Each structure stands twice: as C-alpha cells, then as structure tokens.
Length: 223
Picture 1: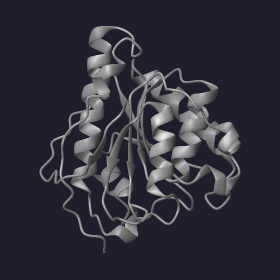
Picture 2: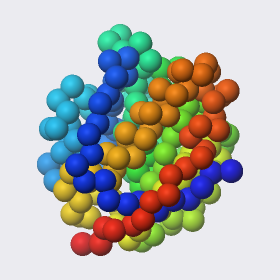
Picture 3: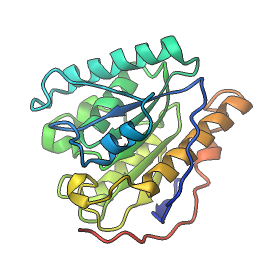
Picture 4: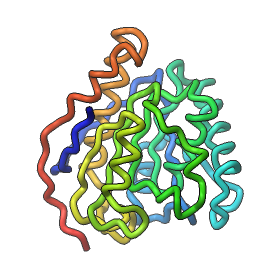
C-alpha cells in the first residue's frame, strides 16, 4: 500500500537526468505560463521537451493523449528508456490516458494536481489498475479542481506514491511557488526509482521500490 507523505523543502536540489531518459512536461488547460513551475523548469533544463497541444483551451482527452503519444515516440528516438512525464492538471489525465492505451516508452510520471476526471466526464477512459512504471502523485489539500482524498483514491489505484503538498491550491502559477524546488526533489526521487527498476529488471518486479516512501515535512504557505 502506498504512503501519503508530506512535502518538504528541497532548496538547492541538484537534478541529473540520465542520457537514457527524456523529460517531457505535460501542461494542463491553457498551458503553463512563464510563472508556472513547469515553465521555470524548462528554462533551467533546456534539453527537456514540452508536449504542445493544438488547442490549449479545448480539453479533449483523446486529442491530448495523442499529443502525449507523439511526444513519447520522439523521446524514444533519443533516449533508450523513453520519457519521464512531468504532468499537471488535465495534462495528468492526458498522460494517464496514453498510459492506458500504450505504456511503452513511458519510464515514469510525476503527476501534480491532477484534474478531477468526473468533472470532465473521462473517468471511464483512465486506468484503474497499477501502472507498469513508477509514479508520484502530488495533491494539495485545497485544490479547487480535485479534492485531495479523491486524488489519493485514484493514485492508490495507479500504485502511485502519494504526496501531501499542504495547502497550495492547484499547485500552479497562482500558488507562487517560483521554481518549486520541492517538486524538483520529488522528480529526483522518481528518477532514482526508474534507475533502480532498470537495475533490478522489469518495473513490475521492483514495484516495492517506489512504495517505500520518504518522510518529509510541509513548509510552503499558500499564497
């Protein structure tokens, strides 16, 4: 069973991405503006790629998942282990839909503040089983788009490590997180678990590695 952890400070996080992995950011509805942590991460790590949508204002799960698929296929051309998805809001749902259709090429996923599938009428299109790659799901206590309890219920189905972000709203630009070093620390944890899975064989065989959890403390106020 996964453990719900609390998010702690991660300032000064050093993040080294192995060459056999390609990081793909998957923004949510309307994309991520310059103040969003996803955009800030992309500026810091110019080798990362963003999954671009044809219409950021139209939350079509099939169309968005198709764009995720295209991004994963591009990642596989340059990285042997495929893509690490760094998704936010509706981007989480698009990533999960693609994982349900074809998980090949997805090495892991950081799922931050997923949108509520029921609000978009897409719950039936998402996986309801343990995913074949490690995932970390981060949810806020006062997210207007998804109650934390609901997010954790979904995450439990997916076999995710569950992380309590405290009261950070939708964990977006309005949350005033800056570069969000605590999130980078979680991504670093995910990268390490992907590496461990590769060292021990198939991800299914090493699933317990990402279920052990980490003990952390929430320090970020909601602004």
